[in-house]
Image (tube, rainbow, N blue to C red; front, side, top):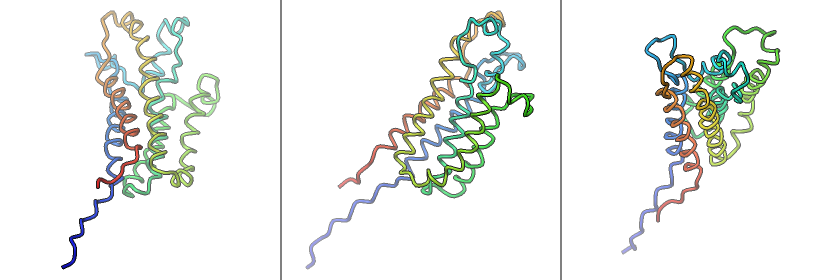
Length: 220
């Protein structure tokens, strides 16, 4: 009789670690485009993507009483575009998903354009920084030829850092704005559902990306 041979443990399935990260990432983006300041009057509801332009019209900001960088509210878009480009480079993921991520990186970058823009406007000092970031995000797609060679663990750690910045920087800039918005609306303002969904989604993305970057050994 031949001795019984114990079945070999199934190898880890590295693709599975990506799905929770991508789901949390999408949740964070949905929250960013949702209401950060909710008001029963639709015209007074402010989304995350609107804040970089909206803040310029607050009296306290115009008077220099708020020491925040308005471009910080574009961090979820910049991080989102870069993360999408990194996802597009992952050969372990389905081709359709990589294609969608690569294409999606472009409108995420272009969403940082000011409402009424022209080449001359983008060259002005006021919009120079976000113009540089937009161009950098789009050109970073060319790096897919390089990032596709990076190990998944390293790419996940880069995603974790980008997502962490997308969670912390806008939130830390938004909190000081609330008193000024309350004065303007003459009502107590609480952060809207978009703020919580965006901040929580990007924090979760960062956490899950770090978790996914930890090497896993098959159980014996």
